[in-house]
Image (tube, one colour):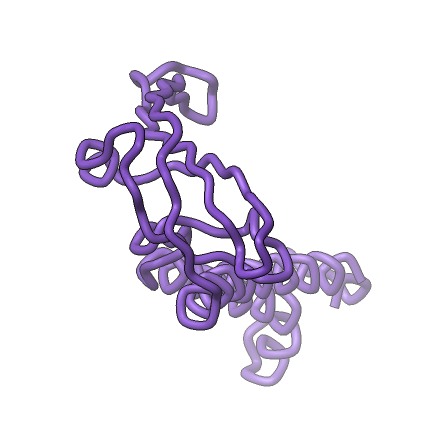
Length: 165
């Protein structure tokens, strides 16, 4: 019974890793292709440095974020102010007062970003996480099915008891 619970938990974890990043990636792509577009004016530029730590809390230098504040008007005339992180190259090329094209969700204009700066633009990270997720699902299935496979092949797992199967 314990083996089945652990196997199901590992499978659920793997499915989450395989599905959630793709959902974010596809939402970013959809917004990029179907969202409304506007011309925004840069109102502020900021650089933020944040400590980059390991899992054990050890510092490994600082990570730099390049932030743009901008304001734009939606199709229905609402003024929207946003703050987004952008690539250094984009940040360097803009000054306060510069204009940029932004894409936004008509139903929630704060969910937008400068064109070319989509939060999930590339598929590399979602693909890597999906591979990890699929491998984790396989591991969960193996945890659950190991006793049955061992019995079917005539090999027994010395560590498993009939109650765990």
